[in-house]
Image 1 (cartoon, helix red, strand yellow):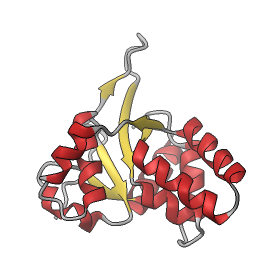
Image 2 (cartoon, rainbow, N blue to C red):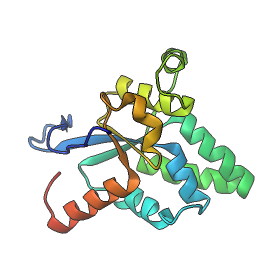
Image 3 (cartoon, rainbow, N blue to C red):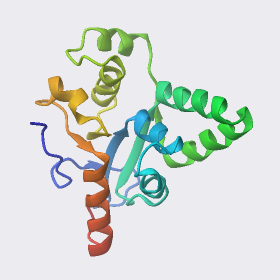
Length: 169
């Protein structure tokens, strides 16, 4: 069983001097964005909408390796110019976590079986993020005790409820 994600207990203060404004930092799995970009999921519109109008208290993150993967597939699907447009749009929506040799070495010895998921877990730890959002939470079962992992549907439901109630999360 994966650890539940609690917006209330995992806030980080934003460094802008505004008391009470908190930011919940979420690493979004690149495969989730890729599935939506390739129209392979019923959540395609929802993923785009979430990235465009995410709650102000939520900051999305993506690994630079994930961004490169998205670019490579987008360039193959259409043209490099379309891929540039997709990447530029994504860069307006998310912060990028740089993956270096040390992070890759740590991911190599991670108990997480899927290597890309292990890299995301190591980034989650290194950048002190609050959660990972993925369509494959089962990829993180080996890290269930230490990491908050939610499916996209769980996050989307929470964001929609918070927006409807207009309650800060």
